[in-house]
Image 1 (spheres, rainbow, N blue to C red):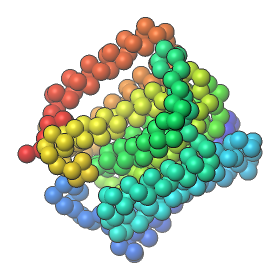
Image 2: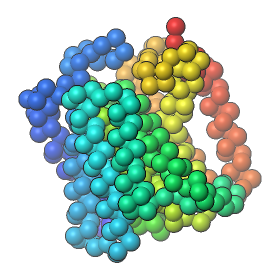
Image 3: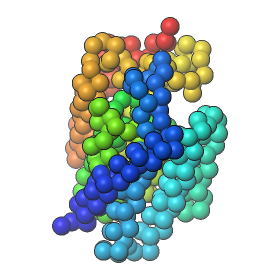
Length: 345
């Protein structure tokens, strides 16, 4: 069985088996997400499910390292990702118990990103556009990489508003990046994204509506950070097709949702970190979708973004421009129809 399938299977099984223990731990230690005016659940739900996702991912990484071995470069990158990702998990766990201020969480995210960039030299020195042209970042490489890591961490965090939404969208994005990595023979990227997808899929058994547990910031920040970090290792190796446009498309749904949340809050004159009920999933619920219907529709949208990302790596420049045009038109139509960018009254 190919190495990436081993990684997926191990992560999925471990996440699935560990989640009930995490539910029990959350209940005994008071890690409960209580209902409020902005949230859609009606009773307290355990919210440190990210520990199960983290356990599944780590188990898969350790299994692959022991069974198949990793070369020196793979070890360096993997250790960097695991260490910085563990810091993110620790930050999320504290937040799930203590509700940290937004500024403190942001500083913690920057610190974890700095570990990966400064201590392990994982950064984006250049990217390529859909036409294959090089864009060298030079002195901007470090801040750009930091912005990418912190930005993606928060995009997945912000989309975690319905049962199974963040886990499913992250799994779809992971599968997308894995398929493109396999096509380009980037084995480490494929293995790590397979492990991340498996951990998210195993957790979905208990997280899909009606959820028995939420992933909390422990899980949503970990998924976002790891997808961002793994993508950077792919962009570092790429000379053409695994440029950052691929993970941008693979994570198109949470990126757009976060972008329009910022626009909406700026237009409304409120702090950009202040939560509201204007996210896409809130809009879908307001027009009559059930939780399951809204989540499944957003899975479909994420899958379409993923297919677009795959297509961009396999077509000519002219077709790539056409795909980008169609996607942009569809986005503007959807934004106007649902009013996602309008301020909340």
